[in-house]
Amino acid sequence: MVSEIKTLVTFFGATGDLAKRKLYPSVFNLFKKGYLQEHFAIVGTARQELTDDEFKQLVRESIADFTEDKAQAEAFITHFSYRAHDVTDAASYDILKSAIEEASEKFAIDGNRIFYMSVAPRFFGTIAKYLKSEGLLATTGYNRLMIEKPFGTSYATAEELQSDLENAFDDDQLFRIDHYLGKEMVQNIAALRFGNPIFDAAWNKDYIKNVQVTLSEVLGVEERAGYYDTAGALLDMIQNHTMQIVGWLAMEKPDSFTDKDIRAAKNAAFNALKIYNEEEVNKYFVRAQYGAGDTADFKPYLEEMDVPADSKNNTFIAGELQFDLPRWEGVPFYVRSGKRLAAKQTRVDIVFKAGTFNFGTTQAAQEAVLSILIDPKGGVDFKINSKSVEDDFNTRTIDLGWTISDEDKQNTPEPYERMIHDTMNGDGSNFADWNGVAIAWKFVDAISAVYAADNAPLETYKSGSMGPKAADKLLANNGDAWVFKG
Image (tube, rainbow, N blue to C red; front, side, top):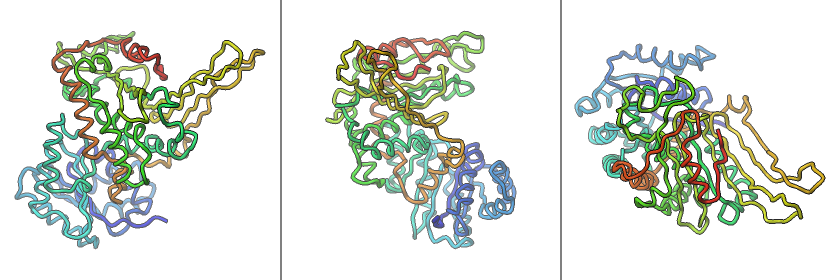
């Protein structure tokens, strides 16, 4: 039985691309499902001067592809209002405060305010400060702040942002969005791991040989060179998305499936992550940049528009993570992410140790592999040993696979829908917390420092491949190999 959620959401950056493509359709889905009924309101704000009617038309167009019932859509849109204001001007917050209080009274919402910052990160701290100082926070119910990544550009800047945010909000009021944590198959990691005794009991150094996380993209830098050349794969994909997925894989079993206990279990793992020195960075990490491909469409990174000719930016990163925990002693966690690779794929591969039983033949049992397929289509694949059909008693691997059905996919909430719904419910299970963000930055900063000093090799890989040979050698040094070949 769906219960109504009473809340008021203020969207900063309300005329932006993210709001139109993701946020309004997500809120509309919550309305269609009955989570939002009569007692909710959406207040949009941005620099752009719009009337309420013009803003409602913007929302109407953004949800058009999700509208089956026009009357329902119009009922939804009546809950929207808009005020233009400058987030850097304290005086202009009076305008926004009036709009929030007016909407709260109109729809009988007793407190319960969410502030969603879909704006440039440099404004996060400023907005948080003025929300408190100018009296926009509710005195009854809850106040929650949702912020998009990046959470800083280094540990120092992230810590500065955290300080600014904590001046207005407690840490349990902060909901740091990493939309990968809202993906169906990322959330499935917990169900597969803790819901099946066969995996729960074997999720440790005694049975697991290595863990692999792959986030590969087929596209190049496209038109993002201005941002991407200052971030690269390390900051764009490893520091946030990859580390958050690793948290679910490395954590201990939580005492309960509440956000407090889940975060505590993740943080125990993050706090045990080994941070590398320069020598270790070069031993355990590989950086690379894509070169030409087989066709003229695949230009080298250095020939892409707006990329400096002498750029040392990484468009590919592969590395080995180590956790100083009894559970994971000697078990490498391999991560890799890159652009212009052979296939678009986000996946986790758990490689189990090969069996040692001797069947009396020369054919040894192979390593069993549990693969959690996250994108582009969700699924689970379990490769296990079985007898071959030959006369001799040899073994072969067979696949036990499941792929999410089209019906399930149609009914699966989009990540932003999940994240907004979870924030309304006060559930921080699938959001990054400050400790996890801080550790990820400290880990990545140590690598970035080596790269900034150009004290590490910069490999080149062919566009359309799965990266440089050095990334394969990284695993081969441990007697391992990448499961996903592209």
